[in-house]
Amino acid sequence: MKKRTFDFYRLLHEIEFEIGSECYNGNIQNFGPGGSWEGEGRDFRYPVRFTNAEGEREKYRGKLPFTMSSSGEIAYCILGENRFSSAHYAFGANELYIMRGIKHALEKLESRFGIDFDELLKQEKTSEKGGTN
Image (tube, rainbow, N blue to C red; front, side):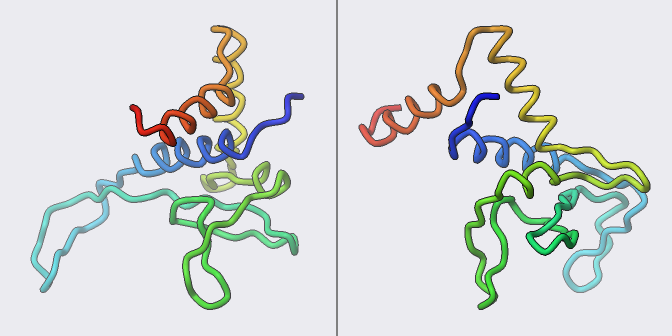
């Protein structure tokens, strides 16, 4: 198994955030400021669940890998392999291991098309430092 870079895992988080932000429930009633009716249905961020270092399941609705620090500040959190592998969406009794699924999909693209996301991300970082787009 290929060792992946931190930037690759950050890309997985960014892709998951985009996927998880595409949820919609037509049964949610929308009320805006002051109780004004804004129609039925609401887009929302689907929560990601994962097992923490103590073996307990946690839920995040924010943008992984950000988490709340003990002081209440939002801080950057590097998900270890165990936490990354456990990140999933819960659908009743079913669980979709979203981060692993995205990783496998990107690796399938790499093998099928002969690309290397780690290398592309490295080039992106180099071009950002150089000020070119």
